[in-house]
Image 1 (cartoon, helix red, strand yellow):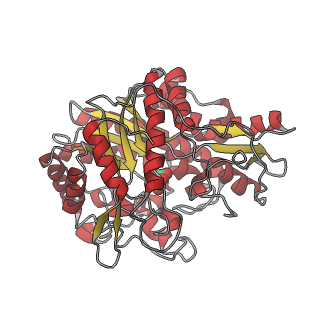
Image 2 (cartoon, rainbow, N blue to C red; image 1 turned 90 degrees about the vertical axis):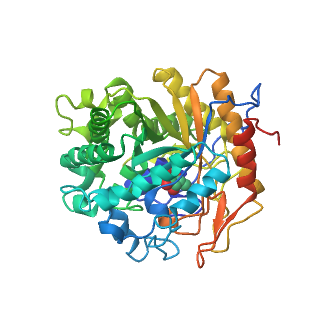
Image 3 (tube, rainbow, N blue to C red; image 1 turned 90 degrees about the horizontal axis):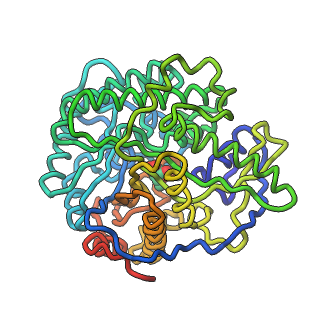
Length: 485
Ligand code: FCB
């Protein structure tokens, strides 16, 4: 996909436009309010509001061969030239497999009550299935204990895009069997850790993994096959349902959630606005509803029918529709979409409104989009309890060190937390907020050129240096009072 000015996470629209259309990305402007800030009545979060940071195993751990870990799809993908922008890889990352106590100390030092990390499936089951590797479990057992010792609640994501390569070789998420193996893995985790690890997030941003990994080829496993889409979507949903069942069967008193990359899909304006609306509705179906609908309603949106032909078996939708303790919402930016008749998907990306403030990815910095997705879940999906499980922004892309005086990040976080307060005032049951991320890490296909951390890291020495945003976030978590600009 052409990268000019747009990026992978800029949206599925770009994704589908690029992948299905193969067309150059012609950008057309969107109309709409550029005023995006919210003005909540109160600037105070409740005392029991959960403050945390989020990370993912592949982006932080390194130590890829340690203690019997097997390869994941990302180990294979990152080594193929051209896949990672700066030619880097995650063999060291933030060295967090070995230095996890340093991470825990930083989290405790910021006074945060929660840490969202992900478990690497291929540390627990090196080929994805079969015999459990006790050394892999032992690592997470130590991490959980270290967190609990400091009064930090661990939230473990079971799948953050790093499928064991052994399962990919058998078809990966396009194969129904992977959903069953995922439940076995969930069982292995809860069986050992379930007495102390009580908070689980089943999948991270399945839409990103499905589209960027299987249609666009920009993420592992690097496939470009639209015919896989329905199978991958459904088997991830099914695996999620089975894993929730396995967790609940394995331990009591659990808090089980799952995390989605929810994005408002907005049509470009102009004379074709009505048609652009069709395109943005199509993207909305794939990006948001294909995950929310089966989970909360036991149905798929009709736009998915063609993709799902012959894929859904009797009883699957009942398995997927599991009760959830919370929905995790990741939010970075809205998607702007237009109709493109030259594209088989008819979907193409559009420019953000003129004058919109853009992030490092060229996306619209729009806190109102966070309110929009939270309130949509409240109105359309039965007002579940929610946690913002990722939100944050990158330094401008580059190879230099992380920016320590990161006022732009403080402003981004403040404005999005105003949206969280506004959502709560609108009746959304939002209980927590996890900033992405603790330390500048391996940002997938962007390597180390994109930096989201509250803490910078010298990659030569591993030395960690807190940025201004770390102190700001610490003050907020301590007081619960969101400072004004
Ligand atoms: C999210 C991913 C996370 C990280 C941030 C910047 O989409 O879940 O791993 O890449 O974006």
